[in-house]
Length: 132
Image (cartoon, rainbow, N blue to C red; front, side, top):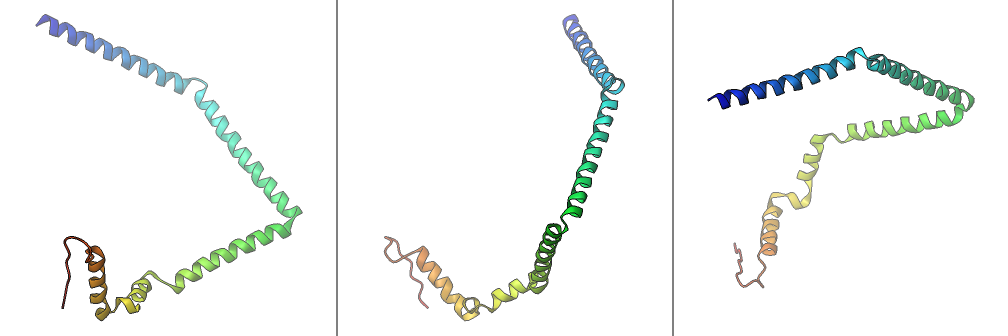
């Protein structure tokens, strides 16, 4: 029984050691230069993004025609997509399928028979033939 107690005590001590190391790592991350450095990196990346935007605006001011052509092309693309979506809503797809000649009730039975004939052709050793 003392062996089991000794093993439990060793496990507890090992767990405490791991917990102390984990807490020490976390404490060093929060107190060290890591967070201020991360904030400075974030500020620099924000400044870099601002510089990119400023350069883009300056390029547009220098060459407005290409920028206007690109904007017009994107606008037409968006307009075409919106117009095509409004023209054919999702409900019309089902209606369009229903109106197809091959999907009429009298043709459906013939199509099912054709499919069955394809699945079980007469040349198979075991043949199934549906007759009306």
